[in-house]
Length: 98
Image (cartoon, rainbow, N blue to C red; front, side, top):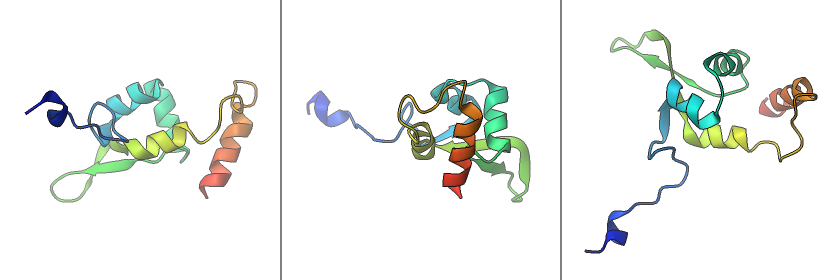
């Protein structure tokens, strides 16, 4: 058996995972924890709440699908988002998500 048969190349993964914890999502996006919180709170970035064994939401435990993070990161081509037009870009992103 060659090494090429042992290596699985998966699309839409980050470190081989398709679902990320908050810390992993932050690293993949390259943003601070507070920025990630703001993006989630404003409904800009999709996420899923973690639950306990009884189905109750567990505080701030969030999960992110890699495929959705990739879609969000590639929503605008280079040059359309900058510090100067960030509020406008955020507004456009919210409108297209609806």
